[in-house]
Length: 323
Image 1: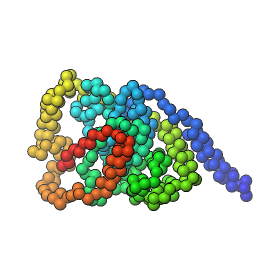
Image 2: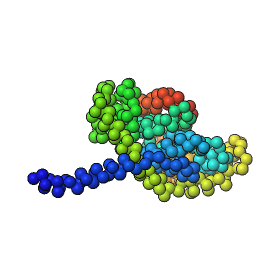
Image 3: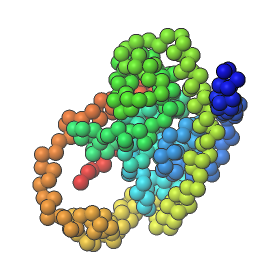
Image 4: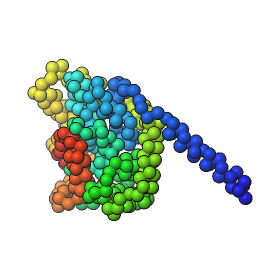
């Protein structure tokens, strides 16, 4: 009987052990490569958002300063005045590292921060707040899960003491993803309970495994991404050689006039023609009673604020207009 069971399950067990051994033996360290880091910094993909080593490698570079720019869809809109283009054109003493994509709200950003706490400590950052995050229902679980990874979770459990912040975060994670790895440990934190010795050892083991797995697969997170070559470099020629706010303002006005000729609202022509022109009459007053006053996003944002405060990160907050 045992021989039959071994024949059935033995190869699977051996394969799993081999995978764990390979991941654990894979080195975590990686040499700094400025050109690679610059390209990773504008690789606005879900995989790159979830990858630890691509972010930490750039942000820990002592010779070249990278500043994390947290946000969502704003960073996907490349033009001559995009922060990446400005930093490249005028050879600023830093390069923005963009962390976020469409739908990445504060809870995702908070969990992503758990992967790079040493890099954020006593550092600088830019954090863009999207007003549309602050709806009554908040963002849905599908959007959350898109940017969530087990490495974020094990980092969160491995580094946080049980307190009011971690309790709230654990509850929100369970709301967004009820069936989750390390659910037992996460549930304890959500209830304000301390993890026992076994829990801590288990979490540490998974945290180390997830870190090494990320190191193994991180090159694929930014593979074949050409944002730097196709969306940053071509815009350099549109900017004046000498930096001045007055000259940049003229570039912005000229660009806006060129791309908003189809309507009187100052809306981009492509967006207006594709999404609005045929139903513009029906939209009058449709958000008359919309309120941003009540939202779970405020609690999620408080997690981010508390994390920045704890790390003594110097942050510039940007709130762009909506609608």
